[in-house]
Length: 626
Image 1 (cartoon, rainbow, N blue to C red):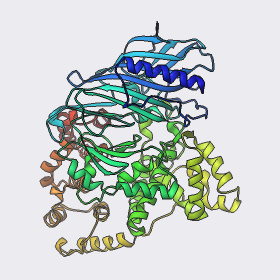
Image 2 (image 1 turned 90 degrees about the vertical axis):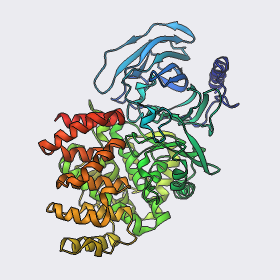
Image 3 (image 1 turned 90 degrees about the horizontal axis):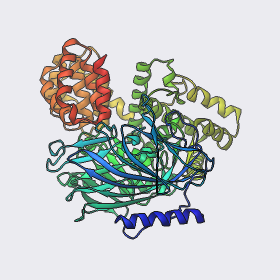
Image 4 (image 1 turned 180 degrees about the vertical axis):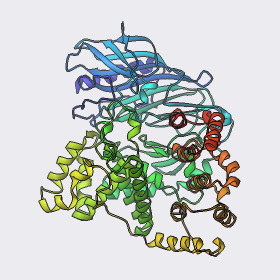
């Protein structure tokens, strides 16, 4: 402990020298520093399994015109294995120089390896305590999206945000980039005056005159949870520990949409123990954000496509909040174990939603999730190795594992366990799981041992009823997969059948349908649907003019499949402004099924790809290259 105090005190001196205060707070030794060992991970070239990286101090400047981040990263380390080198992950970074214990050092950069980037190797000694890397980001940093004012909602100022999951942190920070490697961090970030900087850490709520902001994250986190956003950003509080950030033109809508986030936090705590991250805030990013949400600690990054005006899509926030326990608190050791993050989080999200909205409402989410799982298994193949919960992503992009398998198969497995052992018993198990493994990592094998010992107690009848091995180490959807009740969807099915039997859509009983009922209504339309059917539906419900992104995306996919040309202008407008990969890929996938559609897809992608994050650009480019 004395060594940590000396190191952090020295680091505080460095911050003071360079004008990096933290509103009076200085780095201190942290009782939450994990003690579990780091598992060897094939997706990092670092040697963090031999060297402890305890704290990262960033001192960076964001140049919006040059689209570059430049500065230094100082790592506090413990070379307990007496390694001759510190190995870190980099991807496209320009390394200018390196200091070891504040003295100039040599370094080498290995050849770039597909999907991994390069290894930065720095000579150290057994007594080395700090390593500082002076660097700049490259032109094609995969974690960064630089937006012109025209690409933002308010169209007044440029914007930058990061997306570090799964292994993209290495493109903007030299780091040990693996989910099982945790550290605390502090940062001094300089941005153009008039802009606000935010991170996955303690955050300001207003702009200052200097453009210099300081941050500290006192809980240890892995690199994929490193996050930065810079732009013309406003804040509005919900209660003392929750609030929202967005561009000024969006802040009122966002504050209304997420007005019950504070209740979500309280509900989650009632289920599985205290929220351990201080504040819980949400930032709604410009439209190019490639995913629904990202669970960056203390500051969830969120897509604007959930701003529906009726709070019907905020279950996404329940999901990102749940990650504060499953993922951020107890983290998958490698990306092969991603179901331990995502499956647990989907299950937890639906428990939060059930507490707040009731079981019939949540049953719709379970059923839609089951449909997604069926589709994913059909797409991959019922016997595909990629339909196991325990994945094998060696020599592949970890993003390839982010399918509905870890999310929905994982969640349905946990639901089966709950149904088999009883909810009260399962909740007690999860409470102890989250709190007993807080700020540590978990792999599939260790979890299975924990499950058998602490919940199933090696009871052969329970084990047979659940058959965990078939779920975790087997393909497809096991036959004992639970299925939610369909009370509300049964009524939707009845109305759809009326329409398909010839009833005018204006006569359907669709009053008080939620987004989920409309999705079920459209998802189950048959392949025999005709342009006449689509014309009638559009006339009655104005689907082509739909502002709810979930419904609009499904409608546009149907329009492509059945060549409903009146929807194409609105569809083009939709994919020109929406960057969420979940919505883009189904439309592009539908288009490329015909030669004419592929030409349209190539034309649209060429016109709008700069509005998409590099992650989404890559996915669509691969699709169009086939």
